[in-house]
Image 1: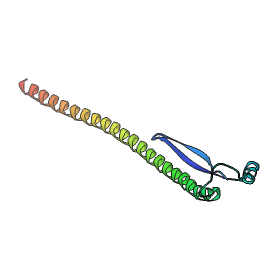
Image 2: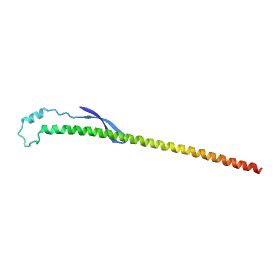
Image 3: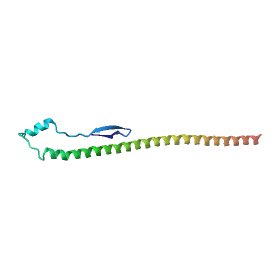
Image 4: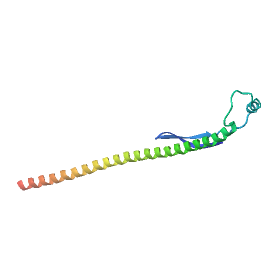
Length: 124
């Protein structure tokens, strides 16, 4: 069984990943092991109980990681978008400020020229 998830790496990038959810099937080796019960160790609880408890926890953890990485990817993408928007707004503000100051300075220069021209006309 597979499912898709976004794997988060850094705020700028995230990659789509296919995750395999393991299905446990009894193999020929396991059947032989079950018939040879003269082993030196005992499982407590039994193998079946361990598997029945670990599989749901593993699936929950994989799903939680997928959701967490997806959320982190979305947050990183939003951070990057806001950073780019801030940079663009700052650049636009600086361009508009320069254009405003140039227009204001041109108007002041024209007024000074008119005053000097009027004073020169009065002296002649």
